[in-house]
Amino acid sequence: MRFHAALIALAFALSAPAIVRAQEASVYLFLNEDTAETKFDGLNVSLRAELTDKALTAREFMRTPRVWLTCYDGGRQVMSIDTADNLDPWPSVRDDQDVDTDARLISQTGSFPELQTKLKASRVTHLMTISIDITGRAGDVVRSWMQGFPIKVKASPGGGLNDLDLVIFPEARSQMFRTNAAALVRGCEVLNGS
Image (cartoon, rainbow, N blue to C red; front, side):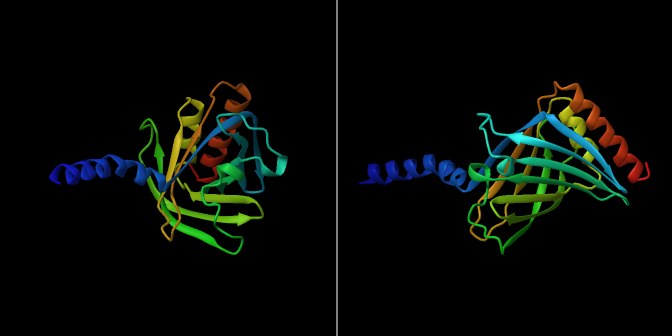
């Protein structure tokens, strides 16, 4: 009987990491650098690029994941990510719900210090829009991508929603992306008064 109890305890201990992982929404996205463009709009500057999954799944234009990094006059900086379909970390969230939670912006390589921040997510039709306040770090994020390093966003919203583990990987090969990224960094510095 003790053998069975020990065997059950061992099986539970070995399965615990799998149980924990089952409660995490891992989303791995890849920058499509050829779609990157930087726009100056009044006193704001933003870099927009399409994202894809590892399998390069073809998607309708309106369901294509995208990322925006926007720097506003006065220094505020926001990263927004649109996801849909199998890349949506919280498919149970309805149009009339918002997710507000603490989050962490993390350099996968340690190229910038971790940022404790806020995340807000909401659904617009079939797209889940995730916005993260990255004030003071937009340049760090873009420079990481220019060097080929990924960034990660982690959040634990609670309320029955899975923990978020979202990673954006760059290609770091496109000269067009480098040009657009450098323009964003400079624009952010000007708007921040640096």
